[in-house]
Length: 103
Image (cartoon, rainbow, N blue to C red; front, side):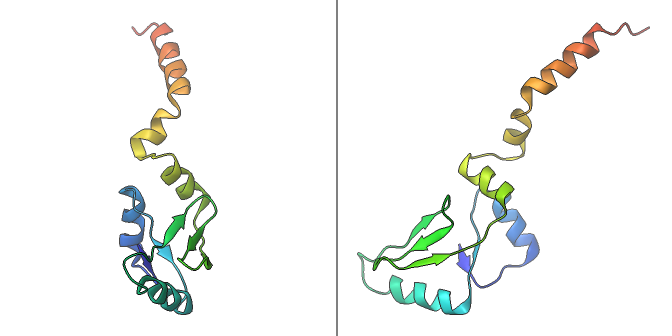
């Protein structure tokens, strides 16, 4: 989703749902609309790793994204996936808990 602005709640919820909200300047948005109106074969390509939008003429529009959110989107991580990245540490902690004698 590309726009010049987003409401804070909507913007944050996009990431929680695996949607990339891209903020660009009005000038860049106008250029992207111009590129998109070139017909059925006009495509815009989003390159998240390089943080750019490429138009059908080879033009590029750069965009900013928080590195953590970028990592999550590229790796398909939601809140559960992020927790599972810590599985080894969680398992170690739980094993230590089992060793304790609770009386």
